Length: 392
Image (cartoon, rainbow, N blue to C red):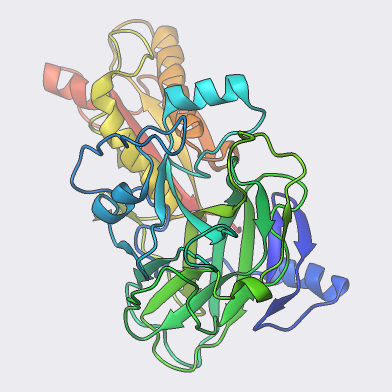
């Protein structure tokens, strides 16, 4: 297992995998396979139910008015707890985030999209002692025994957490875990990070492992499976939260991926399979007349595109803008470019890396219907995206 932060990489000692020398590690990076079909449903915690999410009356997270354990239990699809403790669904609020940034240097925000999970990995004043929180999900299908399996997830220390810890791991099981305790689960994780996470800087970092399952595991639990005696903690040096906050270690989790060697990835957008390098029309994107300002009616489909990109991190997209033939060719070209850029800007604002997005405008040059009727012109005024894979 190793930890990646953007282009930088730090080797971390862990259980369950061979340790590489630096030369072999660099060679391994070059040979890392493109991710196959992700077996984790709702990997970026964006799919919700029982909407709208109700505000949290306790306001536990200061600038996140809807974050908490009730949305995790009642609104988050596919994920559930493994014990009686209370993992959180962390919901980024755009206005709340702006207020947080005005006051603090660093604020909590999902890595992609608007949501992520949050769990306590150490709480010295907790009741009981060794209080822990775990998230759990049923995989799309059981793991195939004897097949090399890839596991990755992104983690970041919470802003208000005064402590950092080690021991964030993954335990695989054949059945669902539901233990009536708030203490640590005395299970042996197949994969574990043994060293501090975010020791010097609060940032999203990727934990990566490989292992070969010995049986058909169908569930995975994520958390700290060690008691206090086996868990290392230390104060975070650049803490920016309230001085009245009790000490604890708490981590945000996003973009969980599990796949097996030989799997091929199926791309799904809004519950429909889409093909690589084939255009997909965003038929519910609307703009102000003769402008590139997105209308509120566009948000639902744009959110679906954010979820698609969060669910498929090995995919990059081209966004193409098109117009009808009304007006000059030069005007239509400029309008189509600015509208494609507006869609791209929305994705970036909602956590999608800019390097995964390209935009282009084609004006009136690529009609899909004759421009001799209002219906034809309406169909030609469109935004499309084209998905393609890139090495991670």
